[in-house]
Image (tube, rainbow, N blue to C red; front, side, top):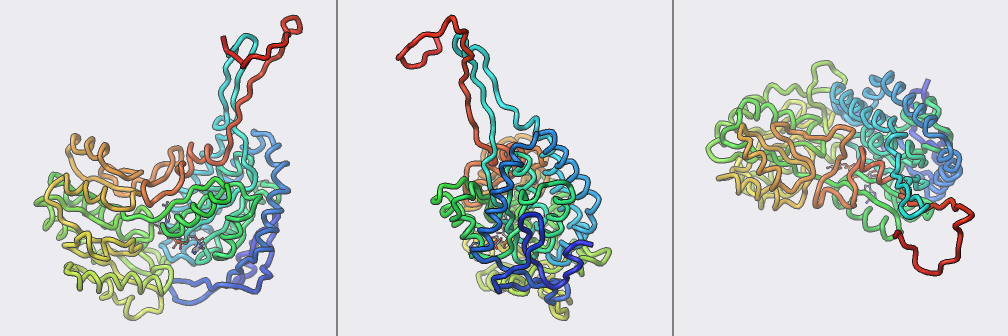
Length: 504
Ligand code: NAD
């Protein structure tokens, strides 16, 4: 029986290969969003507890980096098998604390598993270059070496997948890792810690410290933490990047999003409407790659809005554990109420509320943090519902006269995570791909999350740093390059030469 089952009320830390109950006396509540009820309490670590985790990770590092690549790959394969076997259990924990429906939580685990599978190829991924005879009798070669202790700070909306984006590559490369999960749904992190131990990850190579800003700030300041990966909202991402780099750390900080789906007049309207509904309301809109704005180009507007509107009553909202539920509650009551507030501001700023999620029975009558799906038409860029990342089941429609205006909207937006174009016109797609200022682009694909062997990342205010996350960029982020210039002299040719080294 795992820790998360033995102790249903308290979620502690995982340091040095074992569960460590918190000692700071600071805790936070964890809810079952579908019931609107607190189910757990999570410990918030103190500075001293973070230091203990960094120390454990530091002690484990030399042994782990010296562990052969084939052994590390073997451990990664075992992690892969255990996560695969325990998919349903992981998914259930996600649903219980995050609220997303079980099928969606299973999808999250599947996408996380891709990152572990990628990392099993680490012997190949860490291969360097070699140049023979760069100068007479001199060879030059490059190697990639781990950084040491690295940390990951993760958001509530993917409590299993986003940590897997980070730790799979980090530990495969020979680093030891400290995870600071979201305090809203921290339970799954402890199950993952147990699975990693069972898979043969040595004690101290993977640690979890629960908590809030106190923990994050200590991670950012700690001289023995060499790199920080962050995923969360833009204001915090900006802060993490500025603070972490000021302490000399390598930082990649992924922020929020406002993803536009441009629908050209020649698009297949039914396909576009299906895609918009799926991408706007899946996971109750709490995805950084959710579509939050549809840009209806030219004459397509009225038909498209009507096609979306008529699909909305079909979305089944309910407890994510109940079979048939397609959309669950939002993560907290405060967040749900904040999201609902955008319907008032949109109406008062002149938009048309086509469908109001507050009219759903579960919003009115349930204790859970439910909100129905909402559709807002005739949205303009000056409105709050357009400017802010709402992160809920609210889809805005902006009308644009032509392609140039549509792509201009996307490019004028401060965020640059994902975008999508729906059309049958190959020329328009090529132009969009060239013009659009987002890091990930979908062509008749509304949520273009790259597969695990590419890398994930937005542009502009959606990412601070130089590398994207996971895939090849992840390997680069978690390693340093060293170039070795070597001569194995023929004793007969050795001589003193005070000149600058030459290759010719
Ligand atoms: P958040 O920024 O509130 O929290 C993210 C992490 O930062 C958490 O671990 C949290 O404990 C910590 N944190 C919060 N406030 C802090 C502070 N003042 N100082 C230091 N640390 C702090 O984000 P969230 O609400 O958990 O997640 C939703 C956000 O994440 C959305 O904006 C979403 O777009 C974004 N997100 C982005 C991506 C991406 O890949 N770009 C992926 C998933 C989520």
